[in-house]
Image (cartoon, rainbow, N blue to C red; front, side):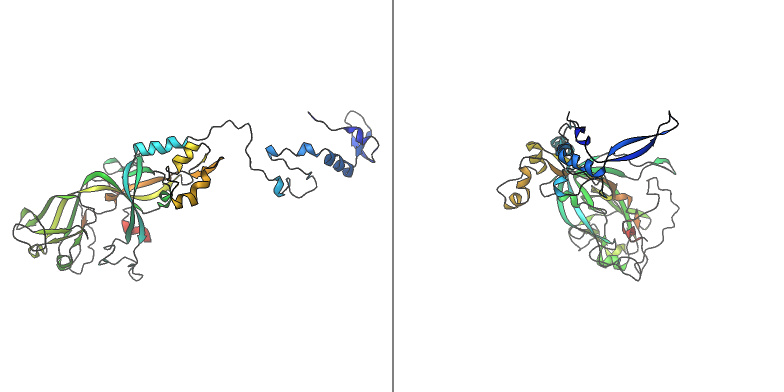
Length: 380
């Protein structure tokens, strides 16, 4: 190990310093080299401070304001050579999501511009959001792994209940579109369905304009109405030319149900089969990231992109060079099932205004404790 050569101090200018010796009753005087001479010695032996592998500054900074030099040549972000912590196996994470995930439609949420500042509510007759306050656009299909169905249990009126919560991690894509998933966005699982129920009443407005069904419908299991105290099973018709045997028509493009004029003033109740859909209510672990060094990990992170594509070469080709790069891993999404936000019934008066729900009927289905709804993001 290299040490200081104190022979340089023998003939140097000295200054006296009085120090106290606790074992004597008198003070002793020692010889100390001057500060200026010590700087000279350090500069002559500056190799001691020139170890760039551990980021130690070259120059003596004893008299500087800052404890380290801010010179560009003294800034070194290279890792320690003896770091034995292995790189994360990113390719295993990517393959895990691919193997355990399922194709899912992701739709980005937008506040509907129909929002009325006077009523503080979206328009009930809005042709875009149908009074829900949110629009869903730009659908994209991603592989998403749904995990951790902890359900967030709470103590409800029937004991432990849950609020339909689950977690999910989207797969990495070449252009990173999964990083755009945000609050209120909607995820629809392709191939998985669930049975739902819904009820509404028919007035003149709904007879003429149809009733928007808040669920995406795969098929109607049963549709009923109470006519002359009899429960009547309604049959679907292919158009609005209703007959006694065909009393409702469903427009799949607008998701609206039209019923026979004979049913004006009646309630329509239904059991339907719809895809399993979730809304993004929170994002956990948004800053997931990893260092990637192995070539196979880089190729997996970039989704094995085609280098012949101009866009790929422009944006990602440099990432395939030797060295370590930082990549962003998928977020952990907190989701809540769609039916937790949709009321079991949509009842309005003749002026199409929502009737306050004062029902005392016991509903065994768990609900969100704060009774949130899809349009509550305005703070109402």
